[in-house]
Length: 299
Image (cartoon, rainbow, N blue to C red):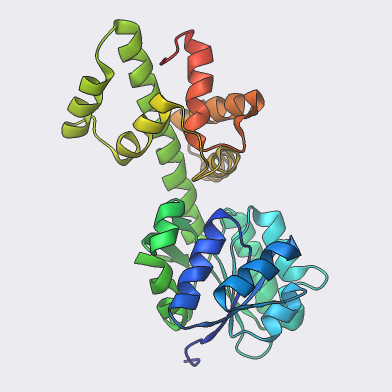
């Protein structure tokens, strides 16, 4: 088995990445970072005692493990396999860990290409929004070889409190997009329930209390009913990213011969909210599209 990794490269310092990388620094890992906007990487590195590099290749050259946390498969592919990509700086024993949400097809394709270059790869997407990234309590689902997982488990345990080996490369991604589709559907159902309660004239505080205590309870009810009612759309997980993930789930389900009607419905709601200008806001803003469709507003 390869030696445990101490030198870690982190590519992608967005809402989630900055918090995840900070936990690695606090745990004592030697970190090098890269971000598309170099000023962000320079400032973050100076604040956290890390080193900012000029290219992903330079990150890989100075790291045992390279983590990517970006938006989609196209970005991961470019950052790992493109010109000055991390693969150019890879060395014997390099292992790449993608923690973005890119879907199973892209994960398998990237993993297969890296394997031809002698570079290890696992997909390790996460669930949990920025507060969980901040306190290191994400859930991480891993697709890839068990030996590779064990090599990076100490890193993952600084960022998450539940690490699940999902199976071969791509299976972490499959579980992630299914989970996010369910979260989006649940959030939309909560929105509809609140709108129904408003239209019927019931006390929404009473409605939420009863649902939370009963069979209508859910994590999304607890997390999102308050922001819906106060129109607090500060992005913990962007609506445009949730839309991307639901679409990935629909694509994978179609390949498997499964029709996900609820996911198809919530995809339309998310798309409508994005068209209304809410793509950069938290995905709870999908309630705006539900209000438009129903002709009812929460407040």
